[in-house]
Image 1 (cartoon, rainbow, N blue to C red):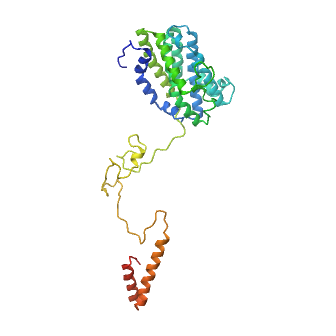
Image 2 (tube, one colour):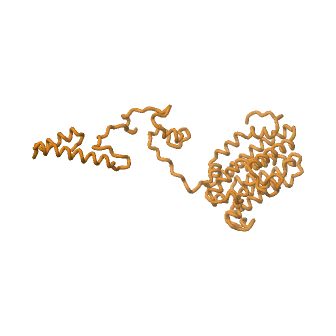
Length: 351
């Protein structure tokens, strides 16, 4: 982690001091599957259950230490709490009453034999609650600010992937926050931005100018990102594997869709500026051979495979005229046929 100036506000320090950890998490396989809405339905529900355990531990600890000077300014469960929303989403997916999902086989397995990363996450939160409650602010920052930011993109992908209606909160309550001060009305993207601004100001107020505390919170925030990466590492790969695009060009040329070769560039015409000119015929047997001359047809064949009426009429008239000339000239037999071929050739007809 780069050297930081701890005289700066905590919100600025967290943004700078966790940038690498944030990028690592964002580019993990599990995060990619989630953001693109690729997880199998059961696996997505399993992920929500793991988040429920995390938020249950975090929000219980925050409630217990609500009066802590570092936590009090940003503590607003009515606005931020996610545990109840996760319960509602899981219940919707499994079509069971609230909390009844806890007896579902997936939930029972998570409780009886939780993945190591999940145990590490909840254990860390319990440890901080008992020993260093002020550091819970780092975990609240990572989770809540992430839900308010990238979570809004995930919401749309999840709704599309699992057939949910974005106008109906059922199944996607976890990603929705209420308008500040309303208590019930779903907030807009503008409201999300205002909540984030308020939260950053509240964090700065709670920590003040205590540089040692700022340093400890930044360090713990990086730990929080690592713990979240651990959760993503437990996700199972989607069963619907997408086929690898077929490459019809030499191996040295990036396939269509490769980040270095946009589709529009790959399909541009030879006259496009900056396009690479190639020799009509390549000696390398692994490369395509192009621009080989083809025999000229009797008549131009349209792209749709048919002939125009005009072309057919011209052809019939030309053949008839050639035949008329031969007959009037008194030619017959092989001599007549040879003459017919010669006359037809002058008329541009191949017999």
